[in-house]
Amino acid sequence: MNLLSTTLWSGIATTLRLGSGLVVAKMVVMAGGPAALAVFGQFQNFLVLIAGVSGALFQSGIVKYAAEHRDNKDELAGMLATAIKLSTIIALAGSAVLLLFHKEIANLVLHQSGWSSLFLVTGILLPLLVTNGIALALLNGMGQIRHYLLLNALTAFINMLAVVILSLWNGVEGALYGLLVGPILAGLVSVGYAVRIHGRVLSVARHSTIDRAWIKRLGQFAIMSLTSLLTYALLPMAIRDELVNQIGWQEAGYWQAVWQVSGAYLGILTAGFSVYYLPKLSRLTLDEDIRQEMLAFYRTAMPLVLLTGGLVYLLREPLLRLLYSDKLLPAAPLFVWQIVGDMLKISSWVMSYMLVTKKMTAWYIGSELAFVGLTYLANLVLIPIIGVLSPVIVYASMYAAYAVFIYLLVGRRYLWKRKVNLLSTLV
Image 1: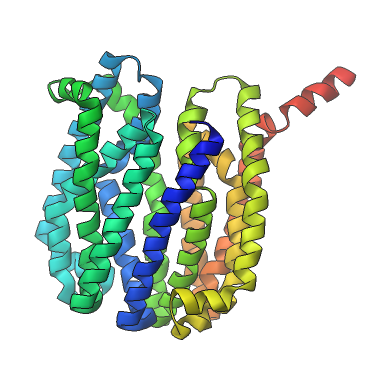
Image 2 (image 1 turned 60 degrees about the vertical axis):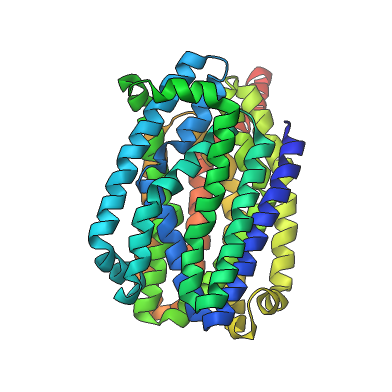
């Protein structure tokens, strides 16, 4: 599939997935108001974090190496054997932690032990959550993009049905349980499909042993994935927790609403790029080819992002009413800073991908840790002073700094290489 078709299919699948997420959010707000939305977001981030830490760390590596070795069945089987068996070991260890300490974790994450059974069930189902991620990563790396996207959309649809039905039955707590049901049911379909299409190589992998060489190669991606989890799961949890401690669950719900709208429109616009670029950039070796792919991204994505961000800002109050309820209108002033941050984030997105595909591990980890640490510390200082505005102002400021950093590190080499060479020949 080329970029255009990948973007089209990804856009359809992601629209379904994010649309389902917004339906779920509306049901949660109807059941418990802005505070319930914050609780829902907190548990959602926890699931991403625990699934990642507990065995889904190798998914980016699976995508990359499956794309590279799709025609070499021996190498592919060795990689899959190592990834699957290590993931299983780590997932079982994560399940044990949840089963033993579910009450303490419920207090830490949601500030109430009454929902400890939710974390107990998470511990039981965790290996299945990880298995779903590995199956989808294999399909992505092997080039079954349409099937990968359709299965992602199916996961979202089943997730939406589960959350809606269980929230109608048991309010906010039912909605939280619904977050577990959807991925498990869809995961059975994903795994079944992956086995049907790639059953032979998976059978070889099942009988193969863990390869030390593959541990090292996959380990680099595991470290980078773990670092990404700090940014996309742990950091929002920490900020939301600080908002709750300083000003309450309701204000945390306002920020969650804006954060979710931002994720929805950015996710739809850039859906094809995340699926297309990791395998594509992994295979490219010439600087000029990489440059052309990066420039294609800027020609395609940035105008749409700028236009859509402007529309979201202009329609912020109607969107809050439509997607949530009038109770979320106090969140409207947060949009201006959030959208500025979104523009800066996307401007640096494709350049930051080069750190992953070219295994610039030290730079990737260092920049991510610095971003997470500075963002959290800034919110720690500013939330008591400016309240719920703090996360969005810090978000925009940090991505401004990150855009400059990633351009100096990566962009100068790939984006302007031709101009530099031309000037040097003229001189």
